[in-house]
Amino acid sequence: MKLPSIIGDKLEPKFFSKHTWNADLIEFEGPMLSLYRDEQGQDLLYVWLDCTERTNRWGVIPVSRGALRGYLELEVTLRDIFINSSWIATFSTGISPKRRNSAKITTCEHLPEVYLPDEDSFLTPEIATEAASKLAEEVTEEYFLGLDGDMYIDDIAAIPRIYQQLYSFHYGLEHLHRTAIQSTLGRLAGNWTGGFSAVHLFSGLNQVTPSIHRAQVVEMRYNSPGHIKLDLLPSLAKQIEISARQLQDNDAYLALEEFYSSTYRYFKENNINGFDDERDSISHALPPQVLQRLDELVSFFFRLMHWDDHRAQFGELNIDSLHQLRALLAYYRRLRKLKPYLDSDKLFLGESRLVNTPSDTPPEL
Amino acid sequence: MTLSTGIEREHMDAQSYIYSAQLSELNDSGIQCPPHGASSLTLNAWRWVANPITEHCFHPVAVRNPPRLLKEDTPSKVCSCWGLSMYLTLDQSVLAFKYLEKNFKMARKRLGDHVACISITPAHGVCSPSDRHGHFDLHPYAAANLNASVASVSPIP
Image (tube, rainbow over all chains, first blue to last red; front, side):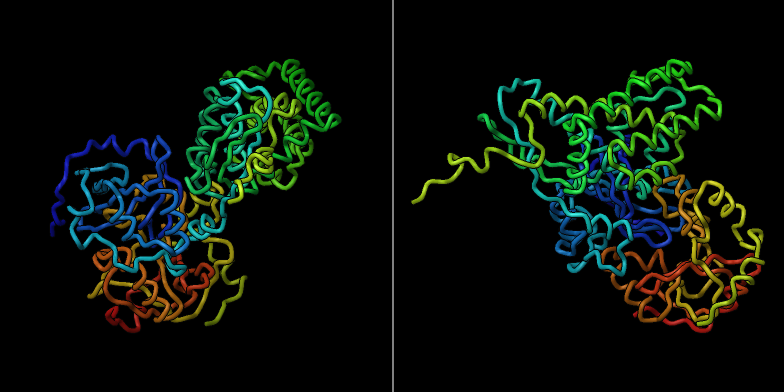
């Protein structure tokens, strides 16, 4: 039994190598439709197409944020996504699911009709995975990063970058139940034994945030005041606001700074290297009493940041307390960079002074 | 559908499952398999099969060749890869198949084009809790002969 031939250009298997698995959307004794992301942040659907006794054939289709949201909410069909895609890649897997064989790139017009889903190919609840339902449940909303005062180009670059890293961290914290998040943290934890990179923590979490949950820029305006209007998950924005409030409350900020300094002293006293080094050095076996103290420090940080709801689940991650603490300190260093902007009324979380100014009101006709 | 006592299930140790070694590995890595709430049941269940039915129809995805998987490590992370998908009713089974087929026209080639009614007893294994669409996984015991427990087979309309 042979598979229908596909007209298209040959594709190198490495085309697929940087695609990151995110979630299975339809699964029946193995995945049939999975959400992936490429290096540039483009969401991709991996679709099972066909099989023989020796191979399974799959398709890879780019999907926009809007189309993915539509498919998850039963407003767009899988057929629509096929038809509207500018390209479709195909490959086969044999005994090894990892090897991408006979890879080709083609278009929907050149795909055999039997591979095109039906007109009413909706992601109905009967076939949607729990992961797909959860992705659909969380809906993004518009949110302002209000800006004011004198701004330089490095300020405009720094604020969104820091905000994105905090957002990625909170996405991970809020979605610790997701397999992709656990795998990413587990993989990074594995790497940490050979040198932890905080940058990888934030970029790794960003990589497993599907486009429908990422903070998308809807509008940027700046004429003092101004704003960056984002479309994001409001619960995460609220978490960042809670954290930022601790910086603006003098007592809370002093407590956090004291925590940071005393943790630094503790690291030094116990010869734990790489306290504020983003690349960190190789961790060594620590005595149980030190690990216990580090665990207490993790709990203390959660209390200081008012994140108590997430403490238990964070502790269940397969990451030792030293690396948990390093991740939290890396978060705090980033958060702290926002303080000067917040204190000098250059940055407002969740509000724009531009929106309600008289000049923003359209003239009456 | 009847539920056997918890005590009865507790007496079936991990060695009793066909894939006990793999289930132990999953459990060692912190993934409870069979999942929490799985129990021994007596019920008629519906499963998609080929016609004629072969042993192959009762192989979970983790051991099917070629495996319909995208990642090498999936079987070591996903409990359902070692279970056999079933439905509580014929209607639920057919409805789910129809929706799948709308998305994947070649589904019959891989999943089968018939549906078998199987008389499940506690001797066959443990069933995961069913979802609201009637789907559950049976984790079979080594001694289970599911092929011999097929009560009827009919084509999927």
